[in-house]
Amino acid sequence: MQEEPLLTVPSKRKIAIYHQHLNGGGAVKNVLKLTELFLGDGYEVDLVVHDRTGSLSSRTPAGVRVIELQRSTEIVTRIYMLYAATDDIDLFSRSMFRSRKQLDKLLYLPALTRYLRANRPAILFSNLWQLAITAITARACAAPSMPVVGIFRSAFFTQCAHTMTASKRPRKWRRFLEYCQRVYSRADAIVTVSSGIAQDLSAIVGIDDSRIRVIHNPVISDTYAAVIESELSIELCRPTENFIVAVGRLSPEKNFSALIRAFAHLNAHHSLRLIILGEGQQRPALEALCREMGLIGRVELPGWVEEPLQQIHRARLFVSTSLWEGFGNAIVEALSCGCPVVAFDCPHGPREILDHGRYGKLAAVDDVHGLAQAINSTLAQPPAASYLRRRALDFSESASAEGYRRLLTELLEQRPR
Image 1 (cartoon, one colour):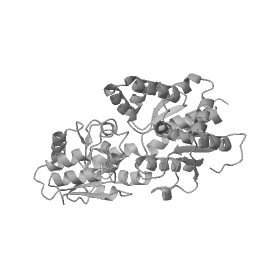
Image 2: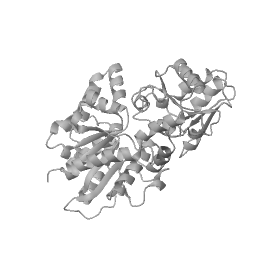
Image 3: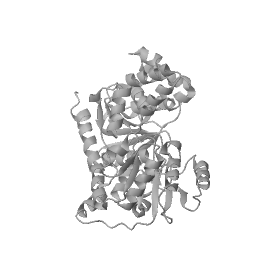
Image 4: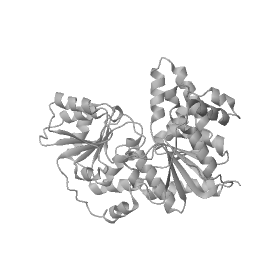
């Protein structure tokens, strides 16, 4: 990593955002929107990543500086970890990051520490639970007085709790959660994108509620929101076609096999198609399931698309079958198109976005029959498009921006000198 000369005073207008990469996905899109927000408010923004290449690298906002970190060795990384824990040596001894696999993200700790020493941002935002550990540890090495904010976007700790319950070695998971509690409690604030994740951090990890802020993802752009708002007085017409759409990685947690099975049990909508937009490791298994269920030609897997809104806008229905979600950007995008939504009631996003079923039907996770029933009833009597679009406005960029502005004021403007 190329470094700049050491600054003796932190830059009051520089914000650093730490993420892994710029590949496609909701987390990266939200990071890029966050950089746009801070740039628009007059801050300098450094986007600090492990890999600056990726499908969304061309969408990095003008004016943001992208810093690519280099991996270090295990020995050097452990020395930095030990240095960071000099005021709490028990923290290092409790670290669960002993194997190379567990240590992977922390191998960027030395480079992040050097970046912080050289550039002295006013505040560091880390994106995702793993990177929060690296960020908080790097702060301890480089700039103990600099505020660090962790942004948590997944239901990872719900999964931890389930795994711990079923594990033959629950003590290992308890030690891991204790370690997370010790590290995260050093953050100045933790932002969660849903109330469910906030509850997980409090109940499962043991983070004090006073450190947690719920700020929803900035899904709907302000220009798009303005168009919606100006047309809410009339029933918006959608050029619907006879297909159902789903969006996400073709991976186990998205649970598209349940959607395909439910689709096979729908009422006799003989011309109805199912389109699943995404790519991933489960493509062969999902294609085999389509053959098994006699759905070749009715289920399409066209792959990943950068902007799925055009397909969602034309669909009769959007379906989410995730086993878990941190939030569920695609559900909000579907609402913004006036597209009806059916979702599994997984932790944590769908219930919160759909307001306990007011704006879309919820089915129990993995209840294929219940999902088919919810799809059938929604197709038969879809809610008004304007009603759904009105709900999408609750997740606008303006609403998210106001939450981050309040947090910045609290941590920077009101922070004791």
